[in-house]
Length: 187
Length: 212
Image 1: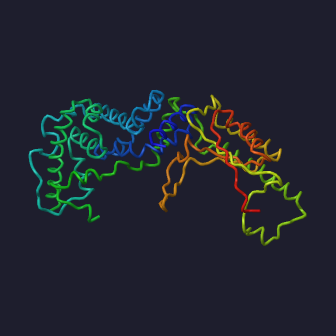
Image 2: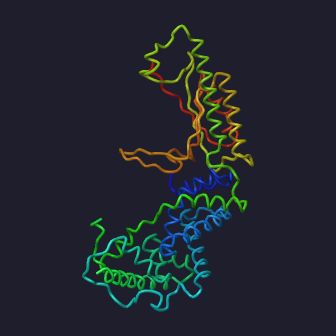
Image 3: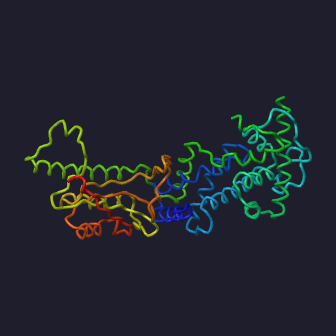
């Protein structure tokens, strides 16, 4: 049985009971992905990530009867998670726009990063992501780590598909620049 | 970790794809989420490890023991030697002469509907049926499965929440019953509360030919 069928059965089971036991199955199955996404989107801010996951589950459970299974439940939940993060960002950092118009919110995107230094690893990449402007980070996280298409990313962030593509390009440049800066700092 | 090191310009994208998408959340988050859902009336206030389920399993097990104990005392003509009782060569079910044993595997999919009954009430319904079936000498075992399964394929074990290995739906528990015929076993399967609640019951006969 596919994961989609399994999710639909789990949702049906939860809706028929609405008890903690049925919810726990859904929670254990999907929260690691939601928490991972929230952690990446917030730039590694654990308290914010927990708050986002909690609010996401509240919204998801209150609307679970509208889930029709056209998409995977994990995608549906991650979409909610991304929305909650956007609202969280607007509330706490209203000056930040998801469409990054300049490099002012992060490392200079114009620079390359061929540093010839020690090389990079996964920890470096995670730290570099945390330095990026939220708009760049969101596109890179959703497309590069979670594998969403530009159309899906555009829908999740309420931006155009073209903006998603251009921000990915500039975000990658900014990421390389951040890696370069980190390398210089540790040299 | 040396295989993760790479030149920035060439391999940052590759490394991005290897950043884990899933991160184990802090244990306290689960209670935080459940507490919030309860407070907003989105979740019924039942504990995770509902004592009623443990009670159901315990009482069912007690009924089975009573049943097997009664059967053993009625079969004093062939007492089991103490050494064999400690380490029986072939543990198996105590199936009455002329009967067969059947597993009734209880599945739950979207059709399963216990209505507005709380898990405690549902558990008591199953328990009541199990007690009666055991008293009538039909029930050997009544257990509920935990919501986690381990699948062993080609030597590789994968443990994950709930099971969908056997469609449709999720395997929630099982009864083992004894009956003289398939029709009688089927009649028992139709009597189970699981059937009454719309759940799917998969009936399989134990093959005991090698035990003769």
